[in-house]
View 1 (tube, rainbow, N blue to C red):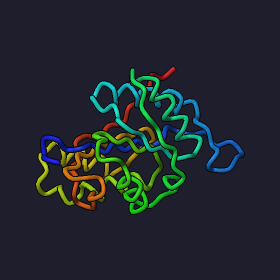
View 2 (view 1 turned 30 degrees about the vertical axis):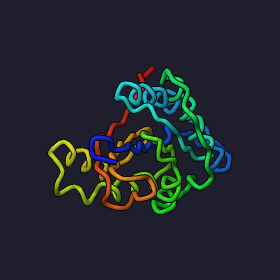
View 3 (view 1 turned 90 degrees about the horizontal axis):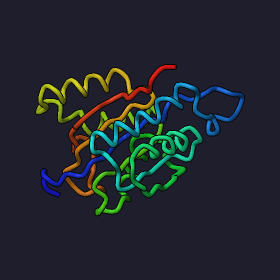
View 4 (view 1 turned 90 degrees about the vertical axis):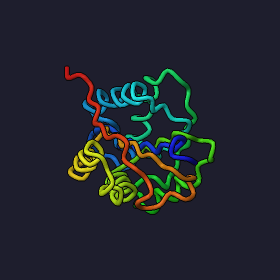
Length: 181
């Protein structure tokens, strides 16, 4: 892949969850999450980051986040629910991403922290020295916190199977929020 045709890995942390007396995997979205997840979908659409494929954790809060975000895209997007994304370390997430078909140009991974934050920083941190001011500022914000509903967009110049620490560039970092009642 040339720089002009770099693929994009989009990392979306699930929206804010509720804390009912259920197993962690089964926690639903809370009121703020129900507002913010659609805002994440609008951001993806407006930023031109409609994915070709989504890989989503099987946890309830990630599935609900994706359903609400997807409804805002104006396009049907194939989704794979993958148990490995739940509570995954960056290396495990990288393995999941490496299995994406090469024809996928924008891959969206819907998951959890700290895995997503650690993956984004691992992929982009080594590029900081060469980063422009906007990218350096985005990396600094991402380093401080990767809150619920946050989205990191990484430009990946090579095939998915060759993605490795330091091989991507942080193209954008956003924290979409829905309107408060």
